[in-house]
Image (cartoon, rainbow, N blue to C red; front, top):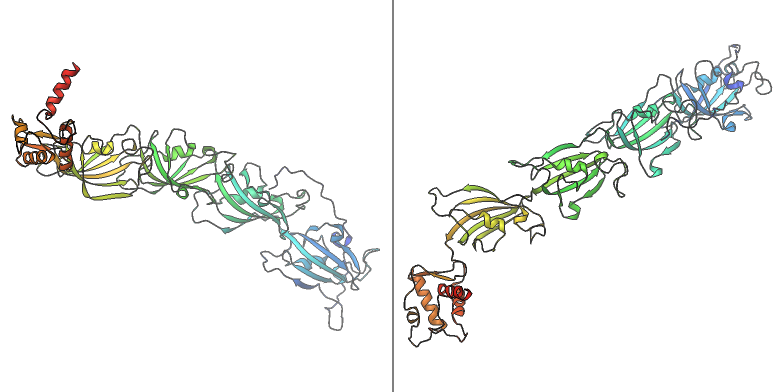
Length: 578
């Protein structure tokens, strides 16, 4: 694009022949129209031998035109040509500045139209002629091509070629715009193109940096819109033209594609695309967020997408880890929300842009889907969904053996449903810490919803089916609860153990207790309600472990000297330490 302050150059005058610029008073001779017999011409004969398909405007009296011509006599001898001077004729028609025949012959012409005009003497130079150039009573032949037409009453003409369905904002004065253009003269001759330079044209509107017609023509445009803008010379480069590419008094045609628009006073613009129900918490500075996004320029060009990497973008919000506009735009979002964040360049990558996909001074648009967020200080969130109507006297606690149903999902809805009850001992580090905490204090039959932050779940690394830094949502139902055993115990007596424990255990009274006798004895105590094994374990495995603990010399049998209660062992250990 050429600026207003372009170097000026002198508009060389045409070697104006009396043929074109001097209107001679000719005598009306009352000649008749040409006849097949070759009678004198009564008026200009116009042969339109090339008419362009599109003719948005025809020459009228008072219009300013620019055209090329060749002038010859009937025998073909040339007497004048604008081509020989390499300078077009630029003049107002219909106001007596041309010979009458040319004035009449140009009326109704279209740009790029070619005509052959036959001008009789009385509409040319009459009986006087032009000394040494045009003989008296000469019929003149002109081949004319019209290249430009405009009027002092013209304004900028704008034609919308393509308008996007979504128009977030329109160009106003003082806005900064980025656009591509092709510039031509009215006859289609190209004089400049931003595409050939490999970069958009970036400038302020209404600040005197552009020709007046372009300032006007860009107003009201939407990003992604295409326009045809026709600018008369007095709103372009006027009588001086521009260098060698734009002649004096030339109308200009610009085909413009607006890429984006912003104002230095703009802030981040937010548009909620989808808001989930039941939003009880919104993101604040300091939260850690996982989100998906598509990033595009204002004309729709995609420059980045987390979906293409099949991985969320994970970052702290409001801590300066991302561009300022995104830091602002993510705050206040709900989990599951979809929002569009429009970031002006001074809150994005500024005048320099970044990489080869984000140009300088580019407005960025992010379509964001918030997957989840949490704060490193978050506890497990517990919401009771239902409790048994009759209530309960005892609730689950650390050490209890419990059976429970659960459904686990990510906050984007990805879930894992387990129909079979799960079994754990609370506090035994068998499940993630957040679930262990959330299962404590429950009544049998109670249902809860648990929201577990990643630092109480699978952390930054994640687990199978669970991404890193993911917040987990559990729905749990406590099916059963049993009191656990003290730490280190595999079996406990409900009452004091028998005084003759070894004798009762030695079923065949041979002074030795093999595994079969040991197992039969322990199972009998459980069935008679005298003691219980550690819940949640295979009874045979537990009894086998108990036997191994008592078989001190590992000879496959227990003697009276080897058999000791754990309480006695603990007491002996205290004395040894003392």
